[in-house]
Length: 214
Image: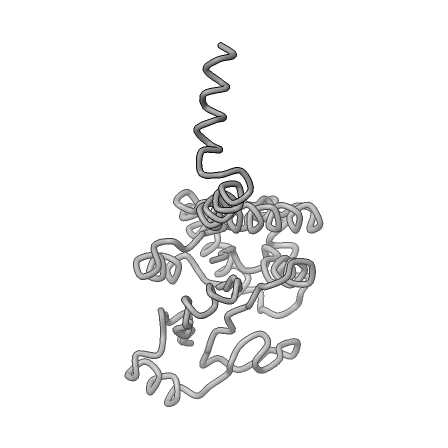
């Protein structure tokens, strides 16, 4: 799960990493807000009516959902075991409130928080992208100050000053977590191969040689 204040560069960061690392799938959230001029249906969000969203809530289709500024946002449930069997990692773009809810349900989820270089830089980015009014920008900045405090309980924090450096850090985290998750399988598989090649006493023989050399 990846969280960040609005304008921190999270979307760009995730897209670049997905272009460079295989077996990543982005979870597209549902929202009742209208699309912005630069957003695509099914790519940035699934844009639905309040009635459809409510039916999805009543049908327990969301892993988590929340209401922000009068609009609802929800993360749909996925077959995590099926994705895991295919070696696919799911990326959730989610706020800190939603991250807490998901963590309660998926305890092995990895949480990553993306920090902007400074509040000044964050404000400049929000102004430059030209999507919000001055009042909304001030609201986002105030919310960002509160939101950043939640980064303390995340597993990783990425300082996004230079996008390429941030991309390399996010890739490194994902690769390291894949290695950690698969370590038992790798060990058992290679142990089987070693035993087939050298006999079941191979490991014991190494231990005895080690004691002889002491």
